[in-house]
Amino acid sequence: MTTKAYGYLMGVGLSVAMLFILLQGDVESWHSSGPLNPGHEKLACKECHIPSDGSIRQQLQANIQFLLGNRKIEHDFVFTKISNKQCVACHDRENDLHPTYRFNEPKFITVREKIHPEYCISCHREHSGQRISHFSPTDCKLCHEEMHIEEDSITVPHHELIEREDWETCLGCHDFHGNHDMEIEQTVGRHIKFKKIQDYFDTAPAPYSGELIHKAKESIYEK
Amino acid sequence: MKNKFFIISALILIALSIYLFRTAPKPLVDKSIKVGTQFPVSVLFKVVAAENAIARALYTSEIVGKGKKVGLEFSEQWKNKIIDAGPLPALFLREVSKNIEKSPVPLGLFLGSDFPIASTNKFSGQQIEKFNQLKAQLSPRFFYSTDINRYVAMFPDYAVAEGCVSCHNEHPDSQKKDWKLDDIMGATTWLYPDKTVSLEDIVNAVSAFRTATLIAYNKYLDKCRSFKNPPEIGNKWPEQGYFIPDSKTFFAVYTKEASLQTMNILLASVDFEISTK
Image (cartoon, rainbow over all chains, first blue to last red; front, top):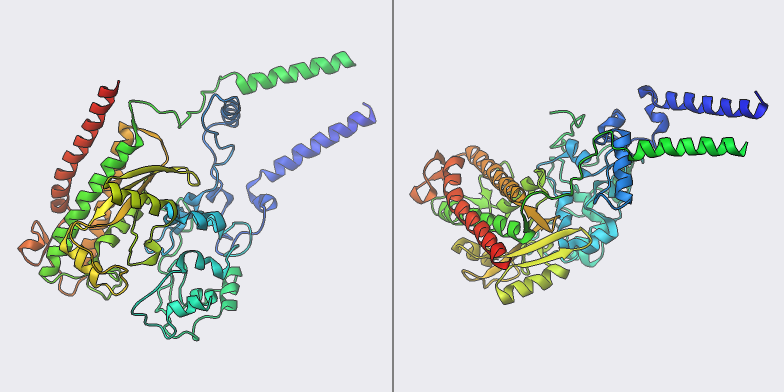
């Protein structure tokens, strides 16, 4: 055997060995695209990465037929595409104040173009190591700029806060998804400061008082 | 050497072609292929809109309207544990909409207006254009929304009961205070992904809508049971006193009327299909 052929053989052998090691269940984190988000640390890959229907060969054949124009839709390859379904399987909440489906209404077209609130991962990108991967205080403005409450009970009325573009105060009193059992602060100034909110969006514990109303399931397979 | 390379390449190509094209494994089902007689999606929209109009009118008039007269309360804060109240009609619809989303049927339902109480329910863009057309022509609007790839239908939402008018005229955040009975107060907006639907799709959509309504109504009954002075839940209606019909009684009235309407819409669309062939 020549040195060149020996080199090729070594390369193929090492690749097969590495592939074998990577496919073992206990080294899943080695091929993760980044750290799991807070609260998801114990989740196995299969909780979100669900095998697609059919064998690899069937999936390849289906997609080749799609490329040749013989099928109308692509078939998910190896794993099903990640969608809101995987998130909602554990995080379905009765009282969600901003459920993703709400943003499918045609009138939210501008908001969809700007921040895509119709998808969970637009704000909660997984493998980012953070609770919230995207949020800007002015996101609230996209839908709530025209809000006017006639009998406003807070010390600085909402329309005044809107007029002075004080969008950082919104989440100081309101939990976006409404999942904390708490009284809403009525005194502007006593609201949670935005730095604390940002820390929470990163990895810090929730600054909102009260227990979680709905605790997330620990597995999508949990009944 | 060149000959050897050619043979190996040809063998690899043949093996790959067999692997990729010979359909020895059963081909995966193309879920986009439609089977059975196809109806335009507007038929599905008309059916679910009629179902909704009947359930909504029944709840608004017989539960909220007559319930208020015998001392039952309905509030925007109805989910608050310490408030003994049920959902206002718009919030009942929102519950139904949420429950539809949880079903496997890809149907969407929203309620909006040009003068809503909550500013986030105000129509804008394409929806306000279509809503203005709807008000001018007094007929539903059907269109396609490209960015969400959904067929859309908008149906008028009429002030069917005195309660709709008084509540919206008296609400401090109402942007219009001169509503009258039978005014178009807003519109329901429906979404569906396919241009054509089978009878099975229509049945599934009706089933999803009815299940969603049942869940919403049962949730209201659960709230009633938690009242300090709970109404009697059984086969009587608020018209007869401090009573609330159980889900079986409510659904018997709703489905009797709705089933007839649904059948009429389906038969009318079949007649149309035959007459145009």
